[in-house]
Image (cartoon, rainbow, N blue to C red; front, top):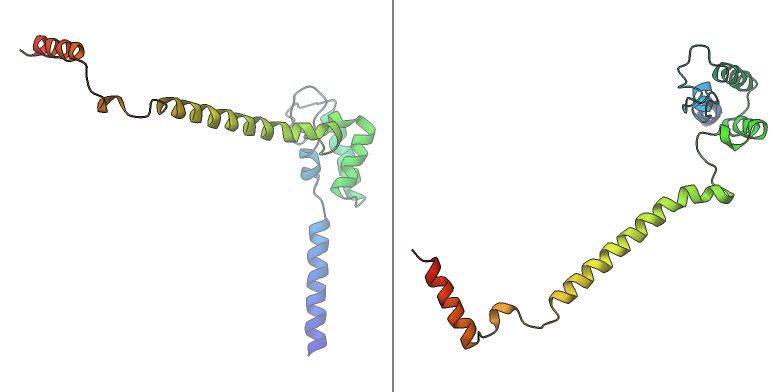
Length: 153
């Protein structure tokens, strides 16, 4: 009984990993940029007789039917057409900047905002006590009373 249970579990694991390893043409086509100038992925290119998208789709279908993984197929396309064929930059070398720079810019912006707000709040409390708490001079008091008398009906 245990052997049967073990065999069933082992076959489920193998079938699950085989299903996870299969790649679809859509996955690969979405990772490639069409070279016709439309700016879309190979899968999304909407030109009816695209001179770039149709041959690339056929090439992807051939490589997928050979059983190659997604990464192997993308590596072949990168070697053949250069990095411009990939719809997103790789995470190595200079391309790493395209992934990191937005986060660095947002972080720098947050720091600038925090420092500015701290400077503004520190400048406001530099006098020590609020303006309402200080005593008015005799001249200020007379001016205040004059202004209040003008505004009363």
